[in-house]
Image 1 (cartoon, rainbow, N blue to C red):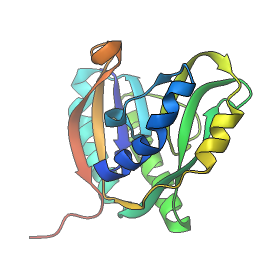
Image 2 (image 1 turned 120 degrees about the vertical axis):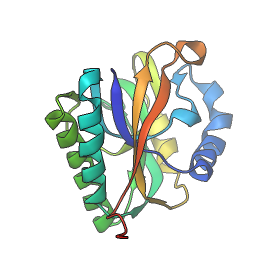
Image 3 (image 1 turned 45 degrees about the horizontal axis):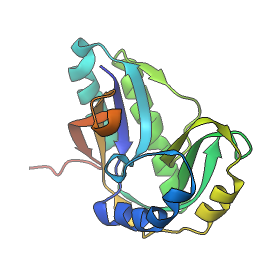
Image 4 (image 1 turned 90 degrees about the vertical axis):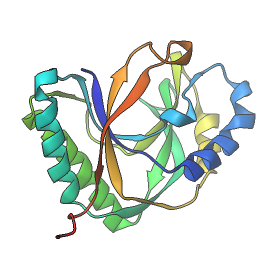
Length: 192
């Protein structure tokens, strides 16, 4: 199974970002991602044996309950590996110091849960972002990064994380299709 754990911004936040990008998309021949797949990836595993799924779900539940909800907003942007030879264009994610600490700890917990459940965890150092576009070949995108630096979306409260299974090439236009496996609320469960 190809899985990832993510924070998904609410619809009104995604709509605000889409309203900002929509009139500008025609100016670049990028493979734009679609708003219903915008998220902040905390952990990604290209290969999880199905027999480890229940263990992963249990561990992610515990990791989520250790964290508390926090406020974020999508603002600014950048490119990987950099604006001069970009392969990916992304929107940034902001929060106060406490929110950034919670988000980093949440990513660390999600990655640890996946690794302990037997998943191969992919990716380098965590950097909170929303992937907006992929480029077929490296390109200079400094103007796009400057444009994104002018964007600051509405603030929202992250109160849950979601485990998705990703099915490559099964979505519209051969994009991945993301299927929700489980949603985990942040914070301790209320005692009965």
